[in-house]
Image (cartoon, rainbow, N blue to C red; front, side, top):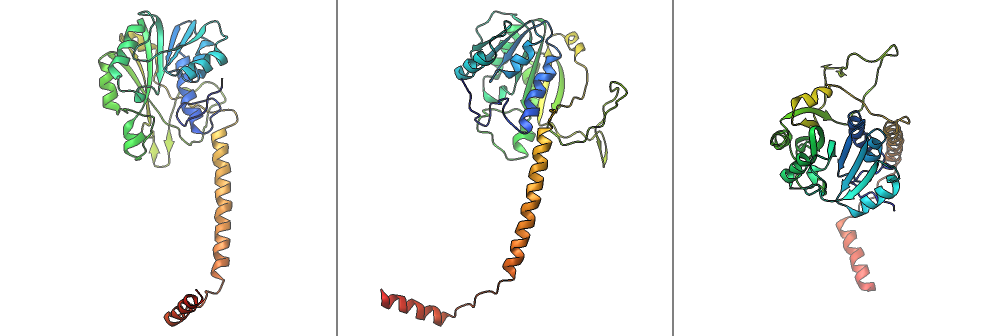
Length: 290
């Protein structure tokens, strides 16, 4: 079974910045799943669950779409430690404390049952478990841009998301995410010991948060493993940069062609403007012929 891209659910065949946004979240979560029982809520196409299953003890992907679950099961379900289940994230038919790690990326904005969803996560998370959630920041995603995503039901801003999480998970470590255009400079002499974001007008020029990613737990000690960090995601073909370069070159060529045509048009003598009397004579001639 093949899924069709609707403009919202990410598919591995997608191109552009969506590649980096969606893979980055799962690559971040993969650091914490080795040997763990993992639940991926709103698993969609299934690629993220499959990625984590390579290191986790077991992974269960849950999605409300029967088509998505069928596709994921057919494409990735051959792994012995990976399965997919069709269910609402507000009511997941699995036993209490079944999972050591629960992830849910770009889910909460598609529903209104936020507290019910958090209650299910709290119920399913084992003592000492880790919950990782991502959500668009409404202020940057919609309010500032005027963009309205037809698939989003209820977006949250930072304080609203924090208030929701506080009711269930008092321990939190917040991260921000945003696709950016940058130059990478890294040491070839060993692992990085410092992360800095530089800009011409000053250091620490982090952009506004387009998405929030929050690592949550009921006990603060669980978050000792989640260190403050800056991570970058790219692909070996640098596809987003390649697409930008191609589009930029095309735009320059089109701009040059438009300028050429405008010059040629300006050199063409303007047609003589007809007087009102000539317009009237022409009208009478057409009227008489009719």
